[in-house]
Image 1 (tube, rainbow, N blue to C red):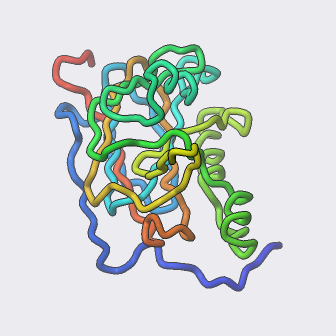
Image 2 (image 1 turned 60 degrees about the vertical axis):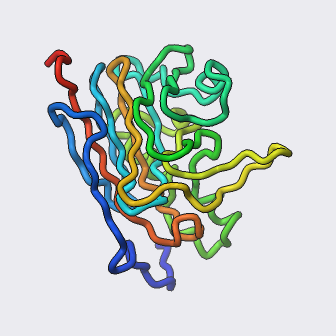
Length: 232
């Protein structure tokens, strides 16, 4: 049995500003869930519906995977998405494409300058490399993805490169990447319209060792709305 002498940390600091905001696109609310700090979430977003993710506390990364609901071997593809649009960042209007080049979702609203899809997801292994082996007991986004994906029959082979909603990963002139202070704030949102039935998986990043979120892991809010005029 593995034990640790590291004391548990608070989920987020007392008095943290939290802004739960509203759906980006009005309509019938199909799903409305709080994603607890360090927790995971998933749901089917039907075609035509809009998924809104709210950065409740500010600068809290929501790592994201997307799968075609009728065939999970078709899933979000970073290279296809970036190659089709000719841009390294995700922003309003970006079509999130699958490994077959087909549209899965379209970003219809975005309240920060750019969204990252290059930085990847943290893992226990990468955390120990970056922050020291004393962090080995802490789970990471990879573990969240495995836990949540199992609900849909997904496993380790299905963990592909992901989106990092609200995380700031600039590409420097020399091509270097860095995870730096975020550009988000409490209540900021990103919204994506499903172009087909999709499974969206979110990891509310458990990272407690990086100053980009002020070492303060806060909630996210996941909302699915059916816009007026969409089929029931």
